[in-house]
Image 1 (cartoon, rainbow, N blue to C red):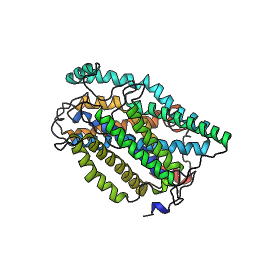
Image 2 (cartoon, one colour; image 1 turned 180 degrees about the horizontal axis):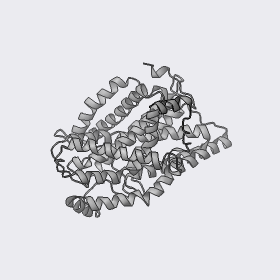
Image 3 (cartoon, rainbow, N blue to C red; image 1 turned 120 degrees about the vertical axis):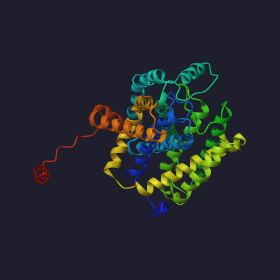
Length: 407
């Protein structure tokens, strides 16, 4: 295996592993939402098999503890890469098309449908808790004006902030001649600040809630909670740093990401996660500062390990994986209604929760991939989400025609 420390990254190189990693984060989000019916708590649809195992609780916490954090790192990385390639103005325009337009359209389409289905299909106890939650006496997930699209609002804010910083940097350069170059040691300082920021924000989020929580709660308002916003902003900034700076040895920082993943990933799954989960929820619950630290350790080690895993196995271009990467954005935007309908349809079936969960994910993703191919990929919707694509022409070669004729 190639040592990442000796790798160089071209400014125009397409990182297929990062594309696949971003898609995996999207698809993992669908599975996490799909498991809500089988966790026995909080989900609008209550399955008859939901209380028989804690497996889905652990799966949810394991995924929720690093998924969106990883997504914001990748978003920061690709934002900085787009700025480097096309300039600030083109970057802001492209991000507005890819992020802000789907958010605005989704608020008036998929969000109302999702909310209507939750009320229509939700269990009586969930609806009662939802009504009580209006006065703030309890907390339930998936609230707020954006539903599952809240991350697009955060990205809009972060990209706007990044564009503003770029403009300020250009102004300072024009006035003083300073090019914004920093000494190599500043990278280590910046990384340390970002790591401590995530730990501190994790502690503030834990201390502000009535019940223990693993990861970061979904934002509930148009004006973001400062703790949640700062938490995800730290990961977004990490992605920018990962793309934009070099290490003290002069190598691109992104070239060091994921080294020793074969050691870090088992540590994260087998040691960091159980310790963090027990410190947050278990019989050995510790001080919030310790629980927050262990959660931060799990989050960062899991991100590091998964990034290395994908770098090892997904670094080469693969047509099928690239197709899944292209479709993942559409799948995530549109999945909630189908997930709710599937959960409600199967809730009384005499099958194990695991069988229902796997079947639900397969059916939902299959339907959405078909819809992507038929109605999105080569249409203005697809142009908005992923950029313009040209439908391939039919292969009229002699070899293909002979194969079709001879069967």
